[in-house]
Amino acid sequence: MQGHRARRRFGQNFLHDARVIARIVAAIDPRPGDRIVEIGPGLGALTAPLIEAAGAIVAVEIDRDLAARMRAHYGPERLQLIEGDALALDWPVLAAAGGAMGAGRLRIVGNLPYNISTPLLFTLAQVAPLVRDQHFMLQKEVVDRMVAPPGSKTYGRLSVMLQVRYAVERLFDVPAGAFSPAPKVASSVVRLTPHDRSRYPAVDATVFAAVVTAAFGQRRKTLRNALADWVDAPAFAAAGIDPGARAETLAVEAFVRLGAVARPTARASPGHLVKASG
Image (tube, rainbow, N blue to C red; front, side, top):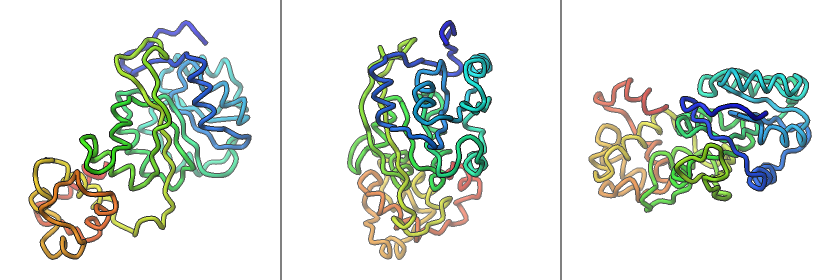
């Protein structure tokens, strides 16, 4: 599976360190019958041990040359290959499909290209109830933000939007030398496990996303000013939130309470809602 030149436009950095590969596979702990979907299999460093353990997996590959190599190496009974962009994939349809993967929620894994990692995380968060867990290799700086607690400098929109849906756990860091070509940054492996639906009360997902986006839009603003289009004084009181606080001091649970009482004013346009929910 060697001989492929990494393509910058696809953000390709191929994992080659056998110890790191073994550690990732051990963390995933694939079992026969698991419905594993690998995003960006590349040269197959993770693909081979995943297939060996699970029997069959699905892989999503945007690079047509790599997709052709995968098809030549694995039969369809072991690898269901989807050639295309993971960002454009209909994940609910994939989750509902059976085929070689059998039944059960998806287990999504991948060494994600840095250039699409954040939008892909937001895309997958929308189908969290269909997922058992996710294991990703990401830029360390992104994982820092994903796991950040309230009050830290890295706590922000990404932290809240993921932590409201998942238990987010950094597993270990990976040096640049584990890849070819070596990226200019360190990486981390992270596990995301969806929360039970009963963990938080039902809140309109679009409104919640818009409130979080507005709250962190200008971090120096107080919530009173940042959320002027969404939350008035009685609503702050009902949620038990100090309007003089700043977004980075609020726990995820507090944002859920704000999302429950938020009501958009005329200034909070429908376009704002759509953009924020993404």
